[in-house]
Each structure stands twice: as structure tokens, then as C-alpha cells.
Length: 113
Length: 114
Image (cartoon, rainbow over all chains, first blue to last red):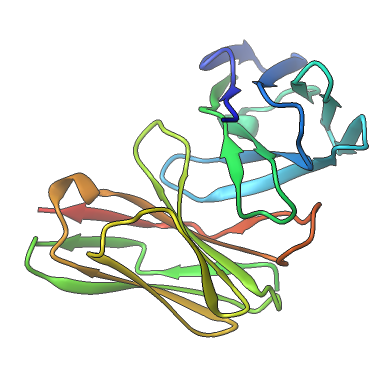
């Protein structure tokens, strides 16, 4: 059974710093990995999706990498802003389609002005 | 239009009530999902509809009854819920059967069962 772990559970950094969020998974047989952002009491917003054949994806200040063989992904946020404060979840897809996403427990990020 | 719209945003109901949650998308997605999320926990999959047919039911109690009337709408009918069913209920959609498709979520319905 796939298990997805995100460490740390919470992280606080001063505004302007670069930071890295970590995601690890136990079964390397995945189709893709998605990073989501969730604001309190709201739905999830998909930030980046990395196919299993890819090593990284970039969108603006965000860069996600994937090392499938070691079961790890990182989300790099450059020049952090207070608006980046949210919970970030990674989810691995072990099947063709989105029917069997396994979510991590998330990292709650606080950017200190 | 890249939105998934959920109504209502908040719902308080008693254990004997019957209510429905609604979800709508106009992105042409033919896979739609219901997730349940408790506070500080990741979302848990409840149901998946693919081409308007129920394809996955993750052993959800029968007091939750999903319905997909057409390709744009997804409902979740609630009856005789328990206080432990209080949670954020999220609807999502994507293109089915294709790896590499992002999942689009609605903003959720915060449900409280008294």
C-alpha cells in the first residue's frame, strides 16, 4: 500500500527566503505526482504535475522535482511572500487516471512578513 | 472556465435531516469525484463517476448517496448523518482515463452535523 509522507508538518520562514518542501513515497511505481495548495477551509489548487518520466516542472516561483527511484519529490518556492502561506499537499498517482491518488498529510507553511 | 462550483458553502443539519450537496463544472471533464476531509487531514476519496457512471465507491456508508444527472453536475445526497460525518466535502473533476491530467477542486462544503 502506497504511503506518502511530508516532513515537516509545519514550517515558518521570513518573507523573501527560498524554501523547500519535501514529499516521500514508498512505492516508486507511480504515473505522476501532483503538488497542491490549500488555504484554510478551502479546496485544493493544483500547482504542478510531474509525469513519472519527467524530472522537474516549473511555474513562476515554483519548481517541483521528482526522483522516482528514491521515492522523493521536492517543491522549491523562491522569494517567498506572505501570500504563499497555506498548506501544501503532494499526491502520487498509482494508476492511469486520477482515481487512486494518495495524498500526503501536508506541510503547513507560514511566511512571516 | 476552469472552475468547479460547489453549493452550499456551509451546511448545518440535524441527524434526521435530508440535504444535498451540489457540484458543477463546465470544463468538459467526464470524471468527477467526491472527497471528504477532516481538519488537518488529507482528503479521502469517497466516490468517482466516470462518464456519468459510478466507477468507485470507497466503502462509503449508505447514508451518503451520490448522483450524476449529467456530465456537468454531481450531487451528494445526505440522510441520517452522524456527528462524526462533520467535515469539509470536496468535489473535483478531471479528464478520465488519462495520466497526467490535473485534478480541479471546488472550494468545498463545510458540513456540521448536530
